[in-house]
Length: 125
Ligand code: 5GP
Image (tube, rainbow, N blue to C red; front, top):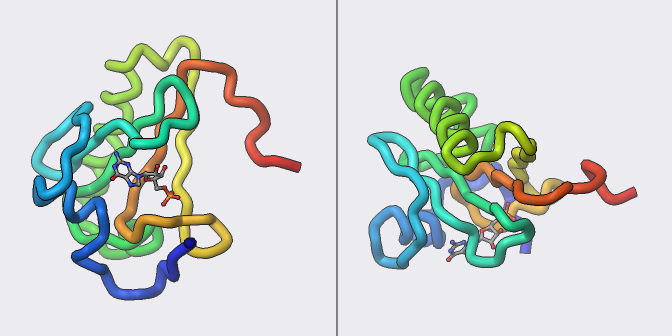
């Protein structure tokens, strides 16, 4: 069920529980500002979720209210994760779903990193 990305942050969302270690995850990367872990329902051989540790609902929220330090840490972490997964040479895809039309289901901002096979067209026609 897609979320309304204009709602306030919900501390009961599943990624908040992962950040509080109440729910396990398979961690790929972690630093002061960022956590990355394998998606529980992978859509490609590599399907990694990259999330900020701060309480941001969506790309819109993150890009407008996160500090420059958090945004820089996030962008750099995505690059590190892709490089360490060996995805630069074969290529990969980054995706952020936002709100209802974007099909966002978890109301904590996250980037999907897909790789490991040809990923086909960007959107279904
Ligand atoms: P969205 O549709 O919000 O962009 O994507 C949410 C993603 O979170 C989905 O790909 C879904 O499989 C993943 N996900 C949902 N719950 C969990 C969970 O408990 N653990 C992990 N690792 N991924 C989850």
